Every structure is written in structure tokens, then in C-alpha cells.
Image (tube, rainbow, N blue to C red):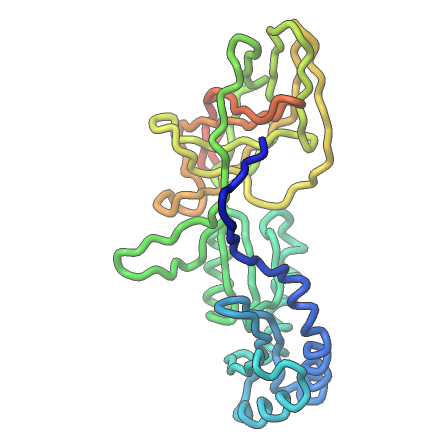
Length: 308
């Protein structure tokens, strides 16, 4: 529906950061060439976008002022340029990244991602890898920026503060119409705390017309507190996004692969949703009708090593 406004409408300007950053391509190239001639001091460069776009260069050593003077002569945007001191030289960060990469190769599934950024080695671990995070923190200290699941390790919060999970906007979804569909799990869902498990969601079409379920090859559950209905966690990590559909003729049932993760999104619960009786709800997208959610389905989360 077209809405007509009786006066001028002013909308905030949101710059296209890729376009804005591209304006600094020559500056980035100049900084890197300079860094090649000063490998003991140069660490890296990156952009800061608030309160305005700036190119930041990280250096170690005792010659920051000299480097800044020299670099300002080389860049085209000296008013959007800054040199900062960082404690860890590039060679040390590369050494740590190599150690982390070797660990990631030998421990499949323990790492979500890792790499050098903003003067640290950034390591993202699965929600059940708190012990590995502790070993990295003890070995490398502040040279590594650690996250277990969605939270920092160790917690860096002050008195009276509570770290929040990254905000993921989840729309409020209507329930899948019970007069048209019934949903259940093919088997009992038992998941180890911090882990991920695949299962099968069965959807029966009780209506009079075919329904087409749109997926990426599977549907992904949210873990829910069955007492409050609040979301407390789920799968965290990249997923492929092909469009794979499942057609359900009337009076038929389809089985759809189901992904259940137990990364916590509530800081007080820890890095992983703890063992206990929980529930899941599953977003379901129907072609031509939009997105819905299932009723709550029971799952059991166990501790590592528990007999199932």
C-alpha cells in the first residue's frame, strides 16, 4: 500500500561502507608498502566507522610519532588517519595464529573461526570448549581475544553489569495452524550440552491443499525454556543457504532434517545450555504464506559423557 505524506520526509543517510572504504584503497596500499619496509614495527591496518570513518594503523615500538609523520605524507586522507600503539608485534601474532590453526586442524568442530584482527588473534570456539579457551588464555594472555559460543572468555564485565549475547533479530512468528498441520519428532531428541545434533522433524498436512516448505536443506531449532517460553539458545555458526523445498500433499507427512544446537544466549546459563529437560521451537517457512513456528517439542540435554 502506498502511503502519502503531506510534508517532506527526512531519512537518516546510511553510507555504503564498502563504497566509503574503497575511497581509501590508495591509502591502504601506501600503508602496506610502508609496513613492508618496517616489518618489526608494522602490525596491521583496519577501519573504524564511528564516530566517523578512519583508517587506523597499529604499530609497536618506540617510533610511533615518526611513523605517523611519514605515513601522513603518503596517504590521500590524512584527516581520516591515525597511528596507534599495540603491544603485540606481527610476528608474535602470526606464531599464535599458526598454533591455533594447528589445533583447529586436529580438533574438528571445536573452532568456529580464527584469525588476526585489531592487534589480537581472534578465536571463536564452540560452546563446549571452555577448557580449550582456558588453556589458550593461560598460554597467550591478552594476545588472544577469545569467545566461547557467543560470549567472551573470560567474562570481562564490571560490577553490576551482565554481558549480553550478540543481538539476533528474530521476528515474532505465529504458530503453525494446528487445524492444518501436526508436527512431531521422529525420535527422542537427546543432545549433549554445548553440542549439536541432527534429527528429523515430521510435518503432516491435514489441510485440503498442498503445502511447500522452504528450507536450506534442513530446519534449525531454537532452544526454549518450557516454563517461560523464552529462547535460551540454539545453533550458532555459518550455514549454507540453498533453497530446498519439501512438498506435502494433503493427508501426507514429510520428514525434514532438523538441526539442534545448544549454544547458550543467556549469560547466566553459561556458554552452553546446561543439562536438563528443555524444549525447542522450529521456524517453518511455507511458500506463498510466510513464516510460522511450531509448538514446543521436548528435548533432553545431557552432560558430556552421560549415558543415553
